[in-house]
Length: 524
Image (cartoon, rainbow, N blue to C red; front, side, top):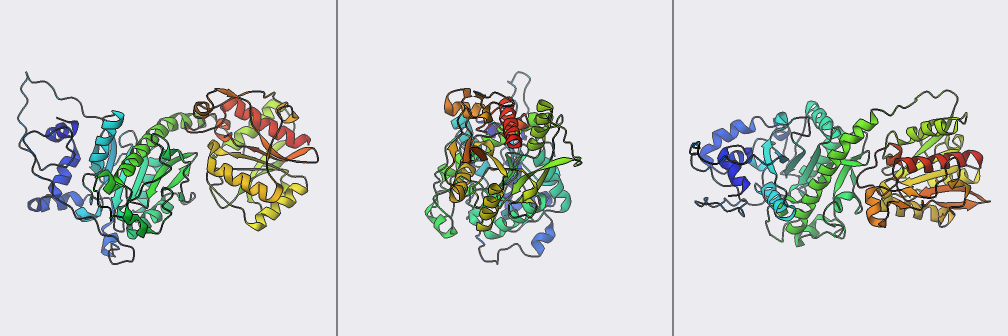
């Protein structure tokens, strides 16, 4: 007997009770009382659920599960009808094993079963696949947001799928924001690519994180490699109707301090979790969807564990926000994920002053290349994760800035391939190809001698070495380097907490390299 059956018989798995009643018309009354606790405002549905809008895709036809057999094997994943009354356990009987830890919570929404559970066996089957492939035993539950704890330890991952419009209120948005900032993960799945649900998901994520735009995740995002290599997606034939690039996975996210706590899949994963093999559905293949689901769970668990240490580390980092008598360093804003860490640059500047005792204090400001204040900053800094492009006006502004003696210091945060390729391309358009700066250059000598650098575990696994020769690329003009670029991540090390997926340098050497670049920009 598998753990899903054991939990069902013990009454400890909410899913077995909640969903099975939805299959039974005679229990409609109890279902209505259950839905009344839903976290979505009923007014959102009264004003239109989107079923009459362009792009709406109805839920798949639900087939009732067969009556349960006398013995349910461990391979079964369909949600059974309610079983017979549980016989009281005799003292001599063996105690049931404890419930596996909850990893996923499926969110209830709306005033009807169809709004939140069009694929009732999606999470069941996904957890079964995890047990079969990774040998990790997890359980799930079904709750409304009002029942959700803001502590991610109680409900690590929230999963919401649907086809219709939905809407949170301000209190619920605040709960979700706090939950995700504490380490929780929210996964929003668009049922069969239905536009009303996807539109609502984008709207709500913008409301929850107004300062951080939702972006498409590049194929080098860690979620596509956290367990399986999923850079090459597999779609069903029906996915051609979605009008998307079928050569890439389509996943969007909100990324904060190198961690993505909110995912939106515009392409349906749920029918794949459920192993509904209809090729006409606009969705991922079942195998790819399940592997992507496993990757998302693995990624979320890893990041939640890292975030605990990251938050603790950040409590000891202080920013000096006084601007009096300081030299401005500008962090460049561009159309892309331009701010990946919130304290790293400040920490670098503080450690630089402590290290060198040079009587120059820095102030950080955030501007675009086309800003009139750009010439006031002798050093500008740029970072990112994802692909980007400069406008022609930005290229011209950077060219003038460098010609007039300014210095550009850039790094690929977490060593991300997408940013690396974009940055090299943009510099090449205006200045020519970046070249590796010789290790004998003064850039590696003062104020720190950097002959070797300790790298993160993720980068060490690729290089097969824990220590490597540090690599900085540059554009040389008149025997100086006005453009200095690190293809390996630095800013995570500046904050003493590189992300576990970061391809970069650890804290000491990341700070040493950063301090050397600051020193070089002063003495050039």
